[in-house]
Image 1 (cartoon, rainbow, N blue to C red):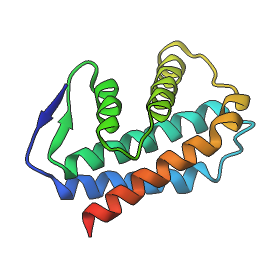
Image 2: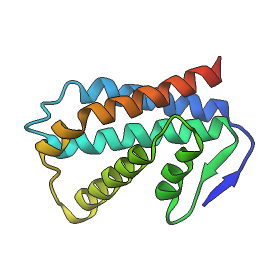
Image 3: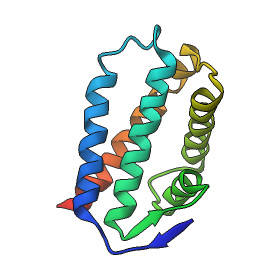
Image 4: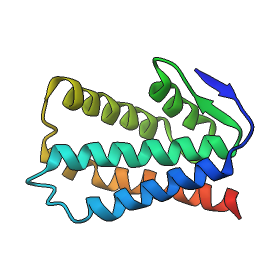
Length: 133
């Protein structure tokens, strides 16, 4: 569920800082050897930037389906295509399966989706930076 809250720039900035730290650390990992961990980190990066973005705009995702609702809410930002939202949900499902069922995320998936991941992260950062100016 997405709820209206007071914009929280301080919390948003903390989430951005955490996402930036993850970006630095993920670049140090060998994606072939640690594909599941790398994919999970990309998911966390996208989630943290997404959470920061909606906090800046005075919204927050809460409840059992908060991550699904968070990513659905990204569609209100015209920069994200339906295909990108579908991909983020696919990454969410893969991450949940790896975290809760111990399933691996194959390197081939990461390799195939790397450009999409990079674009989503770049676009999220761009929107956030423009809003924080």
